[in-house]
Image 1 (cartoon, rainbow, N blue to C red):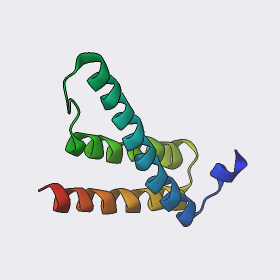
Image 2: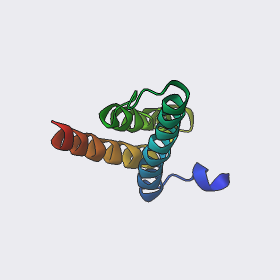
Image 3: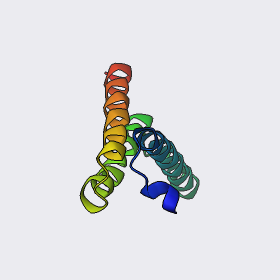
Image 4: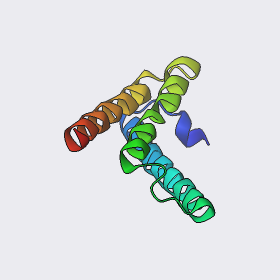
Length: 93
């Protein structure tokens, strides 16, 4: 657990990239469960899953900037969040 307490830009970029991927997978599994239970397909669209997955980074960003006071790690998370947001808008709009 001490590994995540480092103030490192690359650690922030890794956290900022891994969290949305995990969140997207969890939201996809939830969508599959709802689909299996109700029979309705695509209750949670791919655009919505992607957008909500990007915003999961804000939880980690707030933790690293306000609670732990690691600015470099927060900057890494913020950089990846901006890149993912730009990719989302260029892909879906």
